[in-house]
Length: 111
Image 1 (cartoon, rainbow, N blue to C red):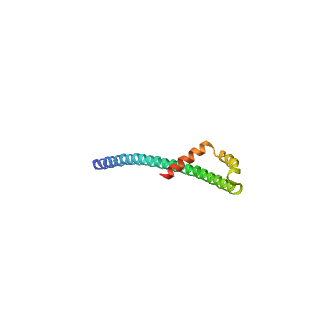
Image 2: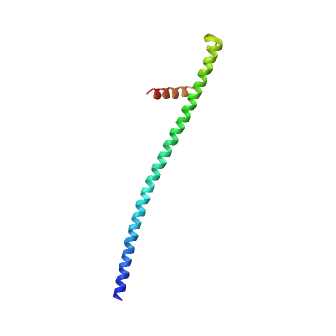
Image 3: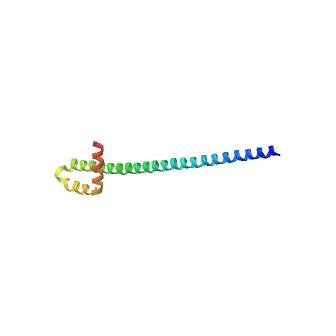
């Protein structure tokens, strides 16, 4: 009987050790998972922000190109002086905010 009780005690002690090690492993893996998840969310947010800027700048550049093409066509058809009023109206279509963003983009592209 003494032998059995020692076996049971040893077995129970081993189970407790395994259980505590398993708990530690779970805690560490949980912390690692949380860190990885946070990094993934931060990267996703950054990529989403960059893509939104890309689409905004692309829209502005396309708008600017269309305006420049229209202005060039007007000047070609009606001459410089006759198209000046129409050109001024077309230039007003670009808001000051859009102009600022285009200027920043052009400066960034020059660098």
